[in-house]
Length: 253
Image (cartoon, rainbow, N blue to C red):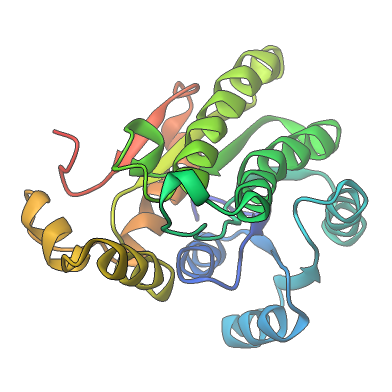
């Protein structure tokens, strides 16, 4: 028996490292997984790499309401009502001085993270089984202010926690749990791009700085974050809702 036997799962940002690792974990535990991402080539690569008849893909901009409804409807049409929604899509924003921060970057980052999570929940909830699970990928950045160098990302990650807390109350009568998964620095391309931007802006090696601040003295691995997502997706967390779940190597301790 797997932890997610015959559970229908949606993973947005599913072609990225954490999304793909989570899709693998969900499939390994018996789930059926719809991988959602922005580019067709990325979705195809992810689904092909999963090598499972229980994996499918859908191309969508998570900040667009019609496209969000479409990936939810496509999932239900293929497998039936949804049990697990993992709103994991994101972008890195941009490290930039606050006083001339690009407004289009701020708007787009907030739309992908906060509006994307809101839309996912809005359209998924009516198509979910009672007792299901919703997970939103926020970040360590959603729990503190940083240095203001990437205000769009920090603001968006805080906003996702607000979406989670509001949705946890709204979904509770149906026993649908809503939680936030907040990783610290992860060893992947997404984080590397963020750290490279910070390093250029500050003149300090951001990767070395972060590692020095993490009690475990290293970045996390995508599969380690996926294991936390699996816990939140499964009945192992049946009495857990409204939680900001840190997975940061002790960085916030």
